[in-house]
Image (cartoon, rainbow, N blue to C red; front, side, top):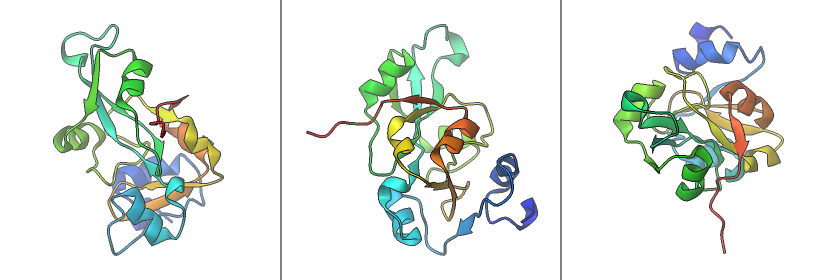
Amino acid sequence: MSTSESPAHPRFAEALRAVGPGVDVRRFPDATRTAAQAAAAIGCDVAEIVKSPVFVARGLPGADGPEDGAPVLVLMDGSSRADMELVRRELGAAEARRADADLVRERTGYAIGGVPPFGHRTRTRVPADRGLLGHAVVRAAAGTPHTVFPLDPRSVVAHAGAVVVDVRERTA
């Protein structure tokens, strides 16, 4: 499938070419904006969906001026939530909070609900929760809230330039 024929966002379709041939991007008529929606549309377990929330980290070591408040993309399995305190500590930041929709679109080039794990407008720091590696295949947004692609989680981590960490909330 050529980049122009792909249902993926054009920027992401270009980034996906670096992964190699055979990655099948699927388009769904209904939104796959949330992990639950994507899992229902695909027919897989919600844990096999890659969530890609964007956070703003302030007070990063060595970040002054305009670099302070840098966005950070956290990759999580669909059944988990990022623990803000663990994210903050992992980054060495003074503060971490969710980014607003405008910042997400500005920095990644994609709308919330369609942010893929790589292929962003600007380079973003990417921690990936270890829970992703517990699956043979995961599915992630392909740049739009209606498109999804499957890939093994180690390849997702590698192409995202991610560092594997433990940042998911623990349940009692």
